[in-house]
Image 1 (cartoon, one colour):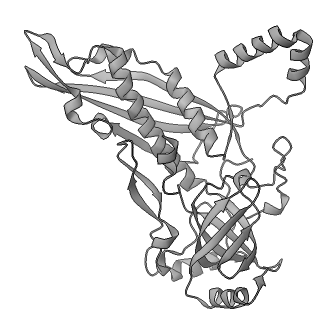
Image 2 (cartoon, rainbow, N blue to C red; image 1 turned 90 degrees about the vertical axis):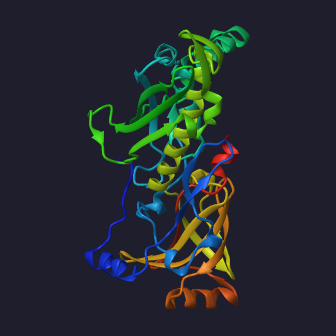
Image 3 (spheres, one colour; image 1 turned 45 degrees about the horizontal axis):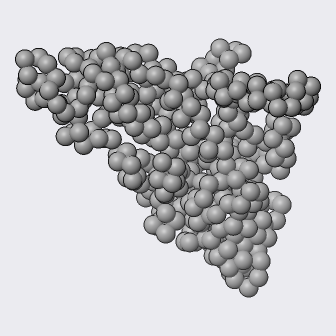
Length: 375
């Protein structure tokens, strides 16, 4: 099983695609979310797309979609949408700094960030997360034991399938603190995150998804004036309590939340949701997958035809999922003969793709407003 699968293209198909892209596609834009979390890369609204933007994004996969059963405990290995089972680790051990505040920064507790990481990743429905929240799991099992007895607990445990991770997602962090000035000073914190994906059985460090380095500064989540403090005779007088781990933790938590937001936007770009178009009526789309395949509310999706390894864009759509299906609206049709032909057929009735020329829709990144609604 591969973490990210790629559709197979012939060299001729790639050449055709490359030749069509006279103008670079712009499918994402920089956005600002409401919690002062600086900028994050999100999908452009379908209403903002130009004709040149209607290109199939990277990392999509249409091979084997007909094999998907969506039985979460018995999914076919050939289904490209089979969710990897993942266990997550967050390492916040490394701390460097100059001047005051290093000790309080070093006292940061990483368990809260680990839970935040698990929650955010589980929420995008592209993985099955094996939690490391052993405390909560143990407490619940103890409650069942007390209330229902040992037999009931044993039956419940034995009836459940134990999840074994396919991969490990590990985030390593480096925290840095600097302060400057004499009587009046400011604390400047930096959090750097790097991620790796590991196969725990072969010990292989995988190349995909490659999320790069994420760097968040305290000024991205706090006004600099909030981190100002005053000293006299080398003693704290007023302002930000740089020596108090509770105050420092609050800043680092916001920085980490910001970093995880960026991580999610990159992950959603490299692991797009894919659905098959069952029919088109006018501008309306009927799609065969929804939240069960990781389709998110207000997705911007490229609609395209796929035949014999050749890909041809048809349009860009705004999509809304239900549990097992989605509906969408083509906001802009591609300016080509295929799109014109399908548009004409869909205008007078329902266009149903034939088995030899299937039509798919693939997401282009994190939907607008997604991060704001999760904060």
